Image 1 (cartoon, rainbow, N blue to C red):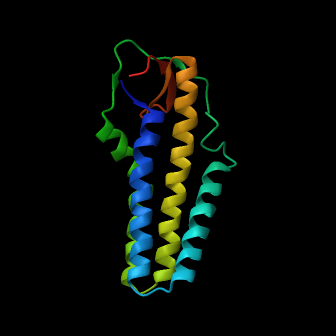
Image 2: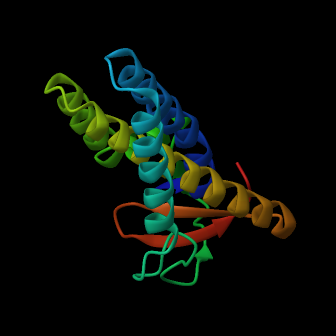
Length: 158
């Protein structure tokens, strides 16, 4: 069984998403969108997506769906690269591709909005990862996910 440390994944993917968001905003400003509409679209995308992710009625990112069990002694753990790969597919890559298509089609405002959505995803990941890391530090243990079974485990921080 391979486990993913949830806080580490969130904190690793946050800067990737934020960097892509800022690159998209820069692209929107460079390809001719006037400053105010581009910044407004980016802000709407950022705060709209951050709110949608945090306020998800299915439980949101702050509400685990089950109580964690102790991690098995023979469990292996995903590397940082694996954590990022799982975190960016399909959401981050999909939104980035849609933003690139919008820019290619001359829809710079839509590209800025989608870039803002990436920023909102990055802010939500940063908030979630920070809260979870703080909680792990206080508890002296970490929260892990088994992707195959969707079960949560707790164990020593690695």
